[in-house]
Length: 173
Image (cartoon, rainbow, N blue to C red):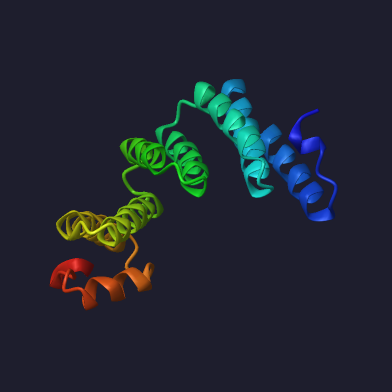
């Protein structure tokens, strides 16, 4: 049974009905519509913590999806799953792939920065000051890129950049 038929609350059922109606009238080919169904089911499974099922759906969507922006979002969501499971290298790989398809994904840039910052903290805790600082510099580079795309977001990152002296004056321009 497809995930969309498993939803048992009113909001999920309403969303599914609306999405199915839009899908029927959407001027897209069959392959694109199938990709959307897999993507939607992946998001539903991911929101319920069913990560293996979500990844299966996202992989199916990637096989069918031709649109580069949509492929970027699929890869981004896959990266979220790997990051939440502590698989940082795989998450970084997926976020970078997402950016290759859609370079205007500030959330992917932010998540890359978050991982580098986390790894920098771990390196410093392990006594590797230079390695930690290098990772913090990488985090700063990605946060600056994310802030340039979305200047009103990532306030904590902006504060960190300022307090660590990593904020560039032209970051908003």
